[in-house]
Picture 1 (cartoon, one colour):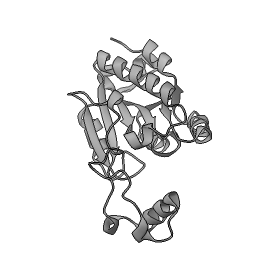
Picture 2 (cartoon, helix red, strand yellow):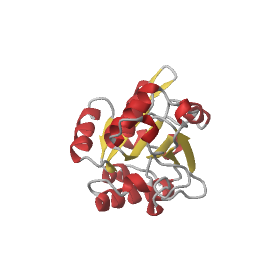
Picture 3 (cartoon, helix red, strand yellow):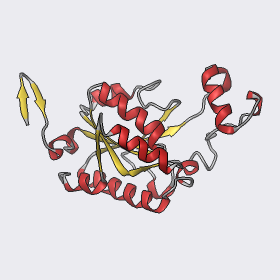
Picture 4 (cartoon, helix red, strand yellow):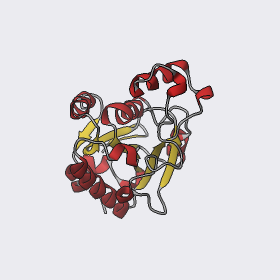
Length: 210
């Protein structure tokens, strides 16, 4: 670690992911997404190992859940995007994506939250937009965020870029993220590696203090 005035500049992975100032974010690990990733078994194995290690170290763990807005509170651009995603030509035909209470909206059982984990409902592809997440991090004195979950090229990438721009040490757990698109997943990891840290679960665990 180096000091610049009162600023602490972490140099090693061990310093960066010290559980005292690190949070693991499990992004949208809901049934409707987990069941459609291109590498479900591999993803689940890595995500479970990361969760177990984070909890064993005392690290804070937060889950996000896609929580749809009623159409009257959605922007026209958002409605248009959903129409393209669901291949409909009339907004009235749009299904409710991840409807609260539906099976697809529930967090995948093998990755379910534990008692001390926090579940954050959100409406956009960035954890920082429309939530009090930044305030929560500051209150808990969090300096580092590790991102895992689905989809790599959508919410994980958007949130990781925002985290870096807001001044947090940011790590994307490459094999604990996934997508329905292998190409999208791999392209996002390549792009992210130029602006944040992209590390395997093994490398994160190896450097985690217990």
